[in-house]
Length: 462
Ligand code: NAP
Ligand code: MG
Image (cartoon, rainbow, N blue to C red; front, side):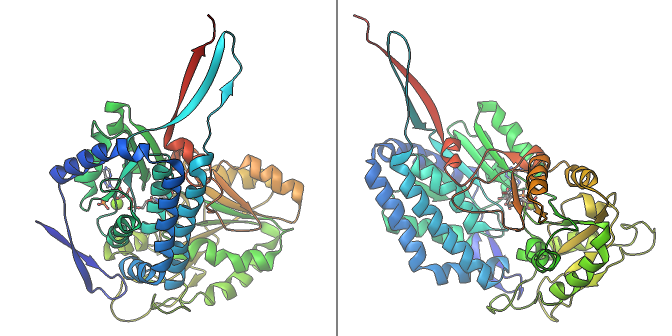
């Protein structure tokens, strides 16, 4: 069988060779998932919950191993990998607890009794990107299994290692064969087939808006359920009345975490003009403290980008001609150091002031590049924040609580935070507005994305 070499982005060394599976292997996996469905649905709720808790416990037991694997494969700092694997366990505990609380209703009607059931969909296909491989996989696996579906996960071709290991741990926890499977290979083969397969009931996709559009089109042939978590160009809106020190100190974490390869990255900082210069001074100190280097070092804040090709794409946003003047590279207010030697490094880069019309201020870069843009008043801040086809996340920094609520209602994004850059919690829903996608993951809301309401009316008329 054909294989692909899995590369460590920090060392450029081959970690492992992994199979490139084709459509036939995928079809076989779908057949297994379909066959496993009825018995899995019939597992008593408390037993299904127990299996998910055991799965969560095994993830905790293997936290260091999984975190090291994720860091080797993605290049992300080990501190982030530990947090993300910790989240995987938390996701499984959360949905274990939800199994027997996902209740239907009885509805007052004339002539009988009306009740609702939450039915599983069947076989779910999960298509996962390379930036948060194990975490995003768990966001789909947790609620899918809790609601009685079977699931096939297709990780990104370049980052399959933690997905494969997690599926092994699922078996060890006692999940029956065929309930959770991983297929490895190319999105253009496996992702397209999953999106079209007549026996797949739903596709849960996380990735680019471009591929999401294609998944949705393919899924239409069989009216598959689709949830899409896509790209973003989120803004952090910083008002003059904010705690400017805190806003500036939080900025690097909000955009450079995971080397900016984060759909929630606050890649635009919109800063009120009266504090623009002061904010930049404070930001320079915060960015200088953002250590870039060996991702296995617990003190490292940022590793390399995931591939050389992706690094070149990111660098292209700062190339000559991309920032107003035709022959000049985009002028940087700050450019950080990068290690020598192997690895797909890109420096943290701050562009200030950036013109909202430049490509780097409009398109998702998915790298450690921040555009700082001045605004005059609240109305302009809302207009700039919403001047994008995306709507995933964002932050509002102000001490005025009425303003924070006005802004939170006016900014079109699925996840907003006030005086914080944190977007993702197990307990709260996560997802996009506009072209950042639809459907919600995490929280109790995700249960609805993996089940269908069936309404049953029983006549009581003699
Ligand atoms: P991508 O190219 O869209 O790939 C995502 C997944 O789709 C991968 O598993 C990929 O497989 C697969 N795929 C590729 N072509 C496909 C096709 N024609 N049909 C079905 N599946 C296909 O995205 P990426 O480059 O991995 O990730 C970066 C993007 O993901 C960014 O735009 C980012 O914003 C977005 N993202 C969004 C969220 C969110 O929750 N909103 C979270 C993380 C990332 P291969 O790798 O094998 O090609
Ligand atoms: Mg891609």
